[in-house]
Length: 338
Image (cartoon, rainbow, N blue to C red; front, side, top):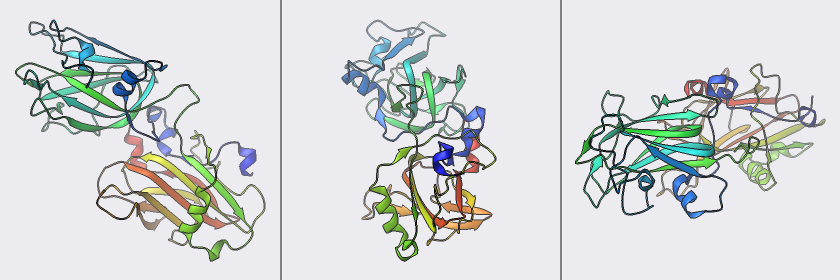
């Protein structure tokens, strides 16, 4: 069955096949969520802040970084009102959080816990995996002074609300924060990978892979869907008869969990047939992209990083003969991201 008959192509990111992982999200561009809402008064996305308690002059709205010269401070007499909540009018893909203290008071929060509601009805769930913690406790590392911010990347999720419960503090529990990510404006407006494919009748093997990738990237890519398909029966293959084909899959943001597995039929795992690159994270480097190491191990594996940093602007270039097909781009460990 050809590409046009299938309607959608390439089962990318296998964790999407599991119900518990459906809240996972990707952003083509990361932005400060609170700051953008503050600047765009006509936006269809808005956020509401609420808290269990607040000292006079330290209201929840003032928790937004850059909103005013204040901060949120829970009541010193309350024993249960130490939680602040941001609720969104439409789902938001949250990928990171940054917290600050209050430089005008000199007070700050040393540790906190995060809870969220996601788009699939999971309520008041705690961020437990993929977050840097304070020692062996469940508390997330906060600030060590009242001036500088502390940034934490989070497992990306589509959220409808996010709450911070303030724990240890210095002086008072003064709290300012910013979330980073992107918004989903409608159910069908999801940030997805981009795919370009071209069938070839000659000359494919005479051109180096990178040149082919750059040539394909000049064309307008089509947004694809992430398939609920766990049997590899729906694949990216040539739409008509040809001698060979090549494809470029662009993924804006991919979790730094390797090896990345390229699953298909008849794909040769070498640099003449597969090329996986991602944006260089070291700003001092003269190279814009890094090339991932390939290992043939049942499927074709791309080893891109030795740590868990997210990979940005990932490009997966594949070329193969007419009988080959590309079915999934995945990482086994991603099924642990919820």
